[in-house]
Length: 375
Image (cartoon, rainbow, N blue to C red; front, side, top):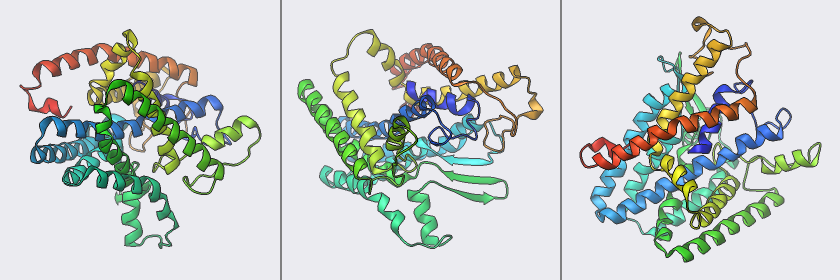
């Protein structure tokens, strides 16, 4: 949750972030590249743990019908929130000229599908998830004609795509739901690992994490399958390394899943033995993830508007309809990468107390207000 805020501050507030990709090797710098790359960990871990939480919830309720209803209801609710509160917080566009399907909606989609799969054996769900993760990149090899119904449907489910839905509205499939569903299914079927004794669990997480990273390195060196973006020798060793690490998130490739989930399992292994004030502080954000997610978007965006005014822009110059978060087109705005880090730290610190308050409020009133189960 903390790292995620860094990516959103950079995306909204850094100079040239609207037009410059931090992973475009001809134009990026190592600092910018890794500022973006480290945040790759966020979405797959969110989706994986969403599946794990669904497993734990099922075990606690021990009621298949009730769990199915909850997953489907929550999934529909998340999709609705994505296209309303989340989309508005992202763009501040009351006309909703861009409707973007991102991580909240893809988690919602995954919950709905998972709700219908609950009666299957864990082994069957795990195999399904693995097939999706390992094999979905093969779809790009299918010779489908552009504009065909089949290709349009597959693009909506498997690929990053944009579709005009009206003269003034564009639908962007930023998080294709099927590849991310594979991660959620693996997260769900890994739920029983968290029931193991602590020492055994930590050792198993360490082995899984190291195994995934070794497979990543081997497949990446082979440079044939696992990611549509192949690596190549660059102008120096550093940029060759950047090319090696330049994996595809949209949609999450096999190599993307291997390295991000591999690192996730290593974090799990070491967090088992990490105690004290540090864990207490960061767990505050983790206990109220959706609340933090919603509030941090609005806080960052309000800060961006304030920054634009400080830089001499006026309200009539702000452009909210074109997906630039309000930043005027063809006019330089924003701050340097170093200032992005300072703003990020301020955002995280400012949100600490609200997260503490909401965590306590939710615990004290979880049986009083039904909607607290969804936020």
